[in-house]
Amino acid sequence: MSWTDERVETLKKMWGEGQSASQIAKELGGVTRNAVIGKVHRLGLSNRTAGAPAADAAAKPEPKAKPTAPKVEAKPKPAAKPAPEPEAAPAAEAEEPAAAPAPRPNLPARKQIIPAGQPLPPQPSANEISPEALAKVSEVEKKAKKIGLMDLTERTCKWPVGDPATDDFWFCGLPVQQGKPYCEAHVGVAFQPMSARRDRRR
DNA sequence: CCCTGATTCGC
DNA sequence: GCGAATCAGG
Image (cartoon, rainbow, N blue to C red; front, top):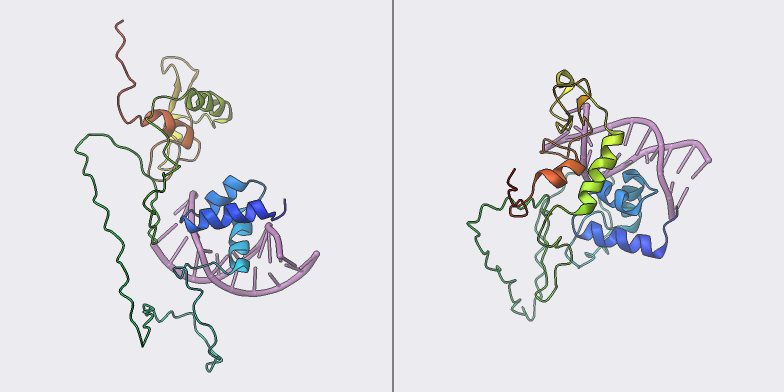
């Protein structure tokens, strides 16, 4: 795979959103996270300087530039006319007392400002057990490592499969999604926000 | 052990 | 330019 325009654009977009290199690599396919990181660096967008490419006109007096970041917040000061920047709206957080777990994995610690009016594409809709998720589960179960109870670790999917009363019982055992007890596929069916589960009378 | 990005360097 | 290997953290 090569870095086509589209792929680079996806890379830029996702990186800007704070997605990890591995996630981007997974999305793009055909590349490793190393490739993504390498490309990111070559593109010169390793760190987000908030739009401004930063003045780099200065020479390099120090031949030994240690990676010790000065951590000085760049505060552009237009000497003449300090235009009053409209500070970004805090955006009122609607506290939802609801018991909805709503797995919001990783919000980038970066400055992610969502422009008002941006419709937030990654809204997976009100969740129900999507047929796709279920399909994914059955598919995953083929690739499952089928480990036993003793083999469970902190990082093995603990999704049980089969009947414990038979020999045909095992745990998924695939790598868990960080923080969760299950692999990605099983997380999908395990954490339903709520609803969807109309108790069926037996 | 899992993950993260950063860097190097042969290709 | 590319990315695997490696490094350096969490």
